[in-house]
Length: 266
Length: 145
Image (cartoon, rainbow over all chains, first blue to last red; front, side, top):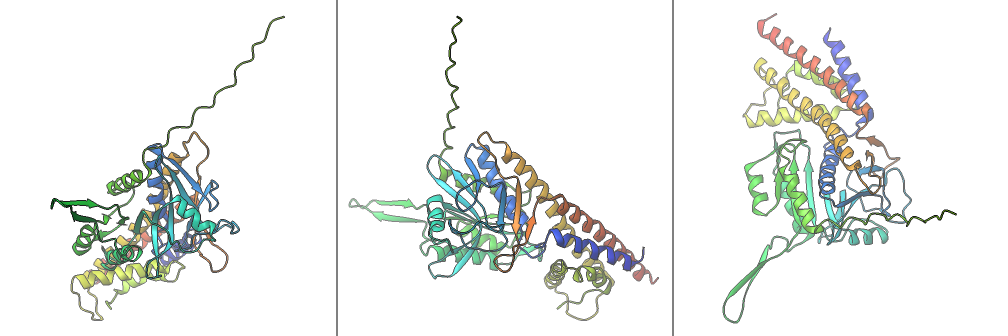
């Protein structure tokens, strides 16, 4: 076959693919984001947590819609359209949470930041939507940056730095991991604070500096993470979320059948 | 900016001419970053050996990306199946990415559709033929044929 024929085949195949995978190669990694979301959902579901895909009003959806890019929280009263994003509702014995994809959150500087995956208290998420939506200003419990990355073999250092910057802008005290104080006897007591957890997960590797930066600040790192490969970091995220949720809710009581009416033989 | 071997440029050309030109850009970025890492000079000449290396780098990027997308489709289908097993009502059955956000009508991308998997396999096969041919032509160039 002449090389020009092969070139035509490649061009035709790429054109055909572009019709069904428009974002491919543009670093949007929607399928990758979807996979991380589904891994979290399936593992929590297997642990007997209540996991549902919802639209902004809280109604269950059958087509789960992912934002194509960073976006605002939709309002409860906004008209539902084909591009209204979905989120996951998670319920445990201690808390109800929401898991969102590609939501914009506002930092102390008033700058907006995108979190590829974020876990929020359900009450604050709903409150944002009830007030018309927009960039989320509430509390973020868990933030995950995802990078399906092909340009280089190592993720650029700018990405771990950017995640650290986001963490500090969302909570300027974030770097403080605990407190120490002395009581009248002179004894020093310490306690650690529960702070927002972050993770950077990528299909590629991190440089030594990147690993060191993340580890030093307690940010979880997942390198060369793909289906069936290095998934232990997903387990760590599930553990974090389940600690926030508390034990799974007790199963709903089985419906009782009405007492059978006794018939008397006449 | 590192020079691309003419045979590699011809291999990338159909991607550049297609709506998925971004894939060719990823390859060029990878070739540049690897050349930088290995301290290659920015001269206009590219040796045959560098041509071979560039073909392998291009193949790594394109095959890696397409195979990953195919793996993600099957992993996502499996996970949706696991989530469907519920006693208390339905879970979602499809995944849709809304690729145009805000500007103009939304463009929906069905992440689990068989058409998406078929099209990924189609490009993977066409690309493999291109890589094979590029390697052969580089071989011939070396042998002075």
